[in-house]
Length: 268
Image (cartoon, rainbow, N blue to C red):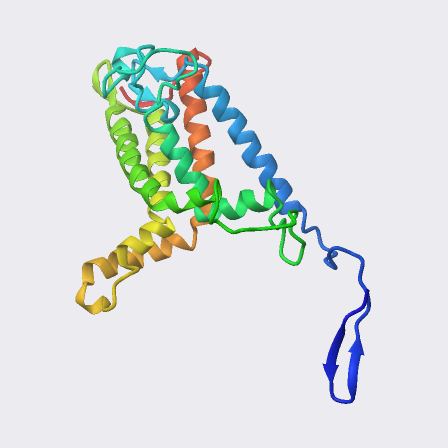
């Protein structure tokens, strides 16, 4: 099939191109890396969530974020900072009150939409590469209409970040009182990165100043909006960094709880 284009002097015929894309670079590599990275993280997190063990270090009050807050009857009493009010069935995660909201926050995140749309749904896999689907209705039908819940998931993520911050503060305890070790560095570092990712969210930026018509009349909100805008340009990097810090924090707590290693202590 050929197409025509109008020009002075008559129509001009275009060559028929059978190739789906003319890109000759390795456009498929970023989606492949995303599939491997996200797939590996989801597999690790799923296994850990349903292991129901090695999540608490009693001597130093280390609690992995994958089990925070621990609210099932199966939880160690000392790790259940907000009570144990859910049944201890295997199918129920110990952090069942927060994990669904964290999952929703990540799934509806603007960056993650791009990542898994391209990598898993091939919609499209890269610029100038045809979509893997014949039709596309946008985010107007189920299940993609749920992407509109991102702002509400952001509010939940803020509360969860506060809980993780409280866990990090409680971890500065040891049998002798105040204590400080490598575990504290990892827990605090993870919390800082989680706050950076949460605050760099596009919804947070819009809430801070997206609807203001006169920044000069709202200097505090403008300052906050400016700060968030600087974080926002790093939202993609922070999304991946926090996946790394979450896995590192969980693995370190697991290794301590299982007795594989000892915590490097600086004070007590």
